[in-house]
Length: 216
Image 1 (cartoon, rainbow, N blue to C red):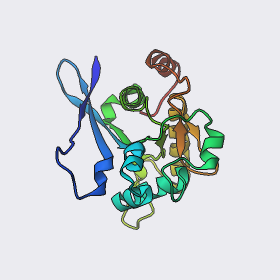
Image 2: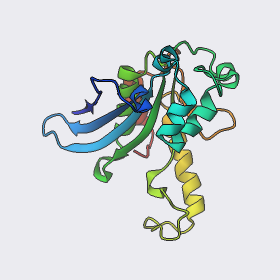
Image 3: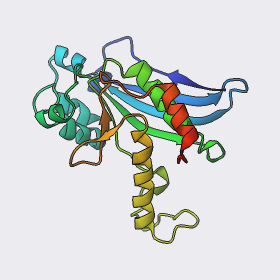
Image 4: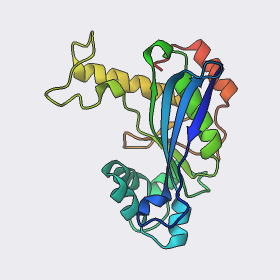
């Protein structure tokens, strides 16, 4: 049996960094008996409600932490308020909370892939950290194609056309995350789900994994 063990770090004193409003969630996917680590999950909990209560600027906090988080802000939030923008609220009409849980990445060791461990791990992560969030978001991206446009990028074995292979791998991931209830955010490369809306249970997802060929 596999399990997910989380590692969280939170300062007990006020921090000079506005990053105190962004909780890093690191998880190890491991064999429960041997404790051998077979994969990892990284997520970020953006505590928008705390930002609003503190009177801080959400854009400054997210963009100051990383340019990628700045892009998340531009997609999901109003430019000068701690609130989801109108376009997002129209597409996801069951948003009740303000916080945003971002699934940053999921990695499974090759010999343990195609068992659905990544999908199951993300489902449990949402169960534990996403229930009070307005949305859970992800940008599906095949890690084997990280920096694939760089001149010194080494293509995986068997890849003849990197651009076509990247598109195919990305679509597989999008279909994969759809099993957990994620839907594409209109006009973007991001996918999201609303925890307030009923989503597939761990049992339902496990059954889907048994029926389908999955990438991780």
